[in-house]
Length: 123
Image: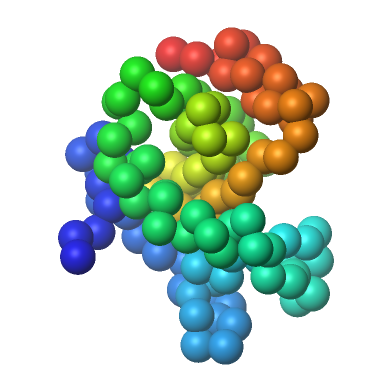
């Protein structure tokens, strides 16, 4: 299996802290909760764990909405697969990209919020 590539940039992996032998990135993409130490598995995230790589690899596909936003000192790249209600978030570290999180967006008002963010920040 090849590693995902975002528009020619290599992707790293946030390995620490590990949870049950899994990298922090993997655990974050499969669980939910605001307190990192108390996150719990989320079935909707688990069902879609194989989605981030093809979404990242195909970020120029017209069915995906891509934008970048400043978050603190970080630059976050959002890849919004609106048709499936799925968002992948990457952290741009200049020399490489870190997959940050990915999740299903269940409610229509939340989907509208991400569409507004895309409209405001699209490049």
